[in-house]
Length: 548
Image (tube, rainbow, N blue to C red; front, top):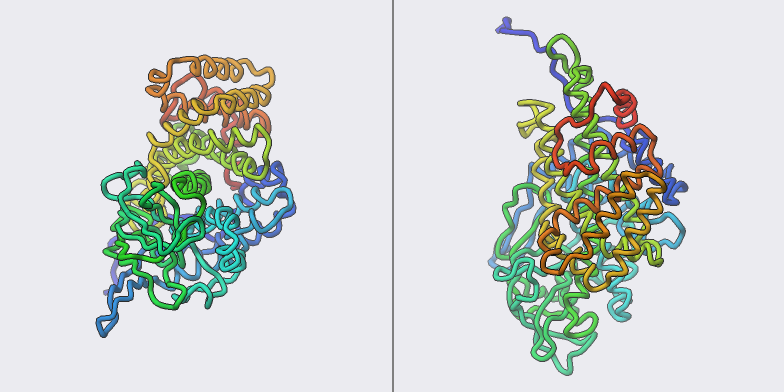
């Protein structure tokens, strides 16, 4: 048929084919500020690679063709094999090949955490599912380094930049991934309610062999080469175990995958339910100290939740700005419409605040000072609560910028929106994070004092910032029961104050002043276009967020 009903016009594809790093002024400044300037060239190369159209296509393929469980082979032998699309393997190979799987622990130079965090931030903008096994592997490294026998078996394979997807015993592989298993049906976030048992083979004790029997309601990711698992010993209570996919004798360990989770998002990554039928494992750390042991691992993954959510906000913002600069409505481009400009500027401020908080928090993991310990202990759960919550709203707002085109599965906007909530839930939901902040303050009140003093120092003589810091200090004086009840309010205000102080200290004046004016003292919590375009240089804000 040679006729058409209409001409396709005023339609624009989502942004792709650009360097994620060199177009992000705030990220480049943060890397330099936190000591990672030597990594600029490597990060620019990774930003170029991950920003290609091919990378966006790989992410789409990995999430469209989801993992498939094969419980048995063709002859009825139990294999518990999860198969992935080649795009999954390519994305994992890129991340590992860039040295990001272990660099903060493998390297010793100043700025290594900033360089790693920036690389993670670039990858997370394109595909988040591949970061799940990567972050758990990172978080397990310091725990395994304290177990000499296990470290001898795993150390070189954890530090390797080669990607080895083969399903083989650890001794036969060049590189490995680690996962974790904490959650059970009856307990959820209450790990102390776990019922899985661990029976010693022989004397038991640290480094001893055990047989695990029970289940895990969430077990990620099942094709990892080993998992850190919480189970209950007969005499000492909960302990942490290293449970490999294959036994040392080369036989398949008795970890039976019941099914894969049908998640709202995070589709490329396999999360599962499993049962342990006397699975073989090795006790890590002290018996009875299982929760503190595995929470150390979870603390690192909570940091990655913050970075990953900040990255989703960044990608949503970049997509929104690029689209509105082209799309026309009511006689002008959307980016020149006053109300849209107000929303985009508000999103730009939110993105820069999330990045500043995430990057400063990552640097705290590099040091052992009172300030770093306070940031590490209190701001990790606080930032996970706040930044992850913000990502849920910001990705939804960005979908709205695209209108109906944003609410279809043919581009990245829908995936960002479905991906965002996972970081709020995994490694502890919002209430759990706020309770962790409250618990940390109650047990070590000096951390709160040091943290607020640090923020006061960064605030300088700024009246609004110092006033908010003093108000938060007064909230600390409330009785414990009453204080816990305002946990969300306190945690949110603490994060916004931290973002404001960091921006006041290092961001351009236009950015810092706009953030402070629209966030502090307003009980702010939505993208409502609170920025008044007539009083701010919106063009400068948007140009900084994404060069035209």
